[in-house]
Image (cartoon, rainbow, N blue to C red; front, side, top):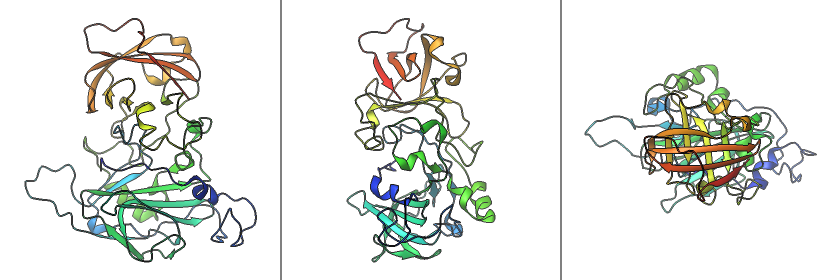
Length: 348
């Protein structure tokens, strides 16, 4: 689960699902001649229901690869949280197309053949898998029917990824921030697009390390304009969505978001200002959503939840609606009261 790589799609490919002209097969905005718009209906689970032990919500925070809330869910075919001394069965499971469509993108992401694959169902709707091995013939341009076996899991435990991109839905907090790839701008909970019976089945199996999530669908968009809450980016990053989802963007990203299990406040740090990791804030710390430029200097006393970072103080001040000065200090009995030369500016 932790090794899931949030790779940018080819922007020209994912942007092609927008309705931008004729729908004929030679239209560069719709190269496969899809004639319908709107959401697709997912009628088959990617893994057989007998193989799905747990599902997860959107919004996992796990730097360095998932500094920002994760825009896909996990389908676990073994128990990733169990304490059994037996070796889990990681053998390959068949992976099926959740809905009918055309393969628009494939990318091998490691030396073992681990692959990401995107299926477009309508001019405005895609779903994708990651950490699968594709069958021969499942290549760009191939047509698949719901239920077709298009590959297998990789032979490694514990899960595969499932994501959905619906261009008719835009995450509002991300809309005015230029750093996101278009796939994140329109990322939605996959469970909302399954048949009612399958959606209920998948939500009923929602589980993370800490327990049953309060929201099985989860959330990735916490940003509120003019408030600290949400995602921030180092100004050296390009403002075109080209690197935020990859190793160039991870160390220069920062998120004041909420945990995917309990929605408790978390500070997710990719690097640059501190070792990568996730901090839980302390009782009495301000709520991210209430911090604005008028709040002045605020301090958070963070305890480590994940990653390399240790207990720390995080000092932050919004100088205006789109600029944040931030610095991480070693833990101590009292909050720091001023920035040093190590402070960094982040923007959105």
